Length: 234
Ligand SMILES: Nc1ncnc2c1ncn2[C@@H]1O[C@H](COP(=O)(O)OP(=O)(O)OP(=O)(O)O)[C@@H](O)[C@H]1O
Ligand SMILES: [Mg+2]
Image 1 (cartoon, rainbow, N blue to C red):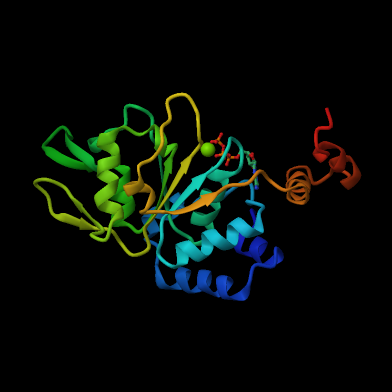
Image 2 (cartoon, rainbow, N blue to C red):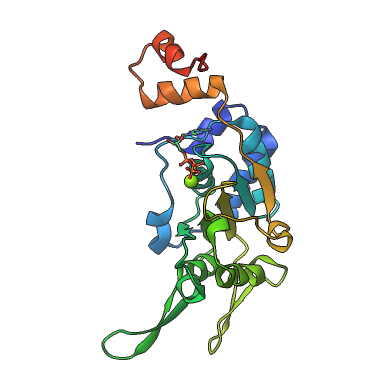
């Protein structure tokens, strides 16, 4: 069985106030049976104590996160670990060019008998107190960004024309990721950035890379692992 990331956090020496904040969050927000399978079981723990502390403090304060960093800095691994440690179901949205408002929120569809509303990932996440990973948010087109604005601001509602307004549940969080400077990406405007706590994701530290190696390859001798993590001297 995989380890509960809460145990890893204790091993890493994360302070007691954050640990008890996690425990209170878990007790406060129950999880519907139906969504239990959506709680991630990460293959990898995110290593980086400083980022963990900042991310947890923000999430426990009710904030949403924007993780900015170069490739392979563990942005998705951290997002997955956060949903896991707080025991929330996760919805993942990759903001490629075809993602529009009806994809995110849902649309009417014919089920063979009648027209019904099929909710999109953002609606489901908001309604059931989940964590939405908004992947590569700087690839999103304006229409998709506009949807996020009203959900992320103080109103905390989703207004679906022709339907009831859906309240964003208090345990819902939105964790966006972005790389800077890739082809097809752009700067996020200030209005959107201001709706997130922004974390600059560092490249994994040598000591953490060592731990990651030994976790991934438990049979590897520590001095062999050492050779893989030496900085590139060329
Ligand atoms: N700090 C870290 N802790 C644990 N794993 C890490 C860390 N940094 C990088 N990795 C490893 O790097 C790989 C890529 O991680 P991930 O997909 O989360 O990166 P990313 O920042 O989302 O990258 P991209 O910008 O390409 O989407 C994973 O195998 C992950 O385990
Ligand atoms: Mg990623």
